[in-house]
Length: 155
Image (cartoon, rainbow, N blue to C red; front, side):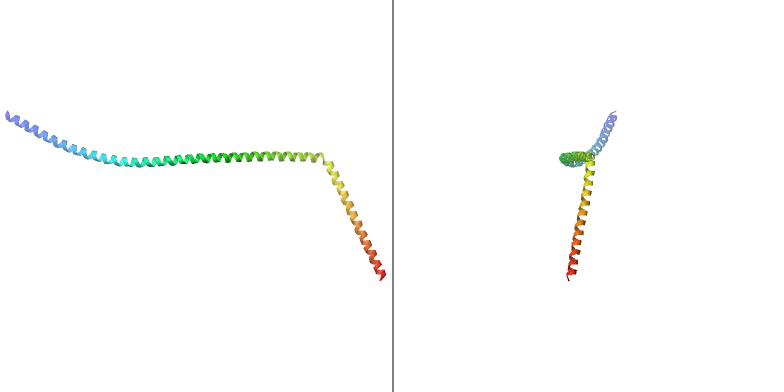
C-alpha cells in the first residue's frame, strides 16, 4: 500500500508538472498577445494624435472661413441696399418722366388749335418773306438790266 501512495504522489507530481508546463506556455502566449496589443494601441494613439491635430486645424480654418463669409455677407448687404436704392430712384424718375409726358400731352391737346394757328401764320409769314425776296431780286435784276442798257447806249 505504500507503493500506491508513492505512485499516487508521483502521479500527482507529474500531473502538476504537466499543468505547470501548459500554464507556462499559456502565459507566454498571453504575454506575446498583450505585447502585440500594446504596440497596436501605441500606433493607434499616434494616429489619433495626428487626427486630433488635423481636426483642430480644420476647425480653425472653418471658423476663419465662417468669419470671412459673415464679413462678405455684410458687405453684400450694403451692395444690395445700394442696388435697391438705385431701383427706387429709377422708378421715381420713370414716374416723374411719365407725369411730364402726360402733362405735355395734355397741354398739346389743349393748345392744339393755337398751335395750328401759329403754324398757319408762320406759313403766311414765310410766303410773304419769299414774295418780298422775289420782288427784291426782280427789282435788282431790273435795275441791273436798266444800268446795262444805259451803258450800252452810252457807248
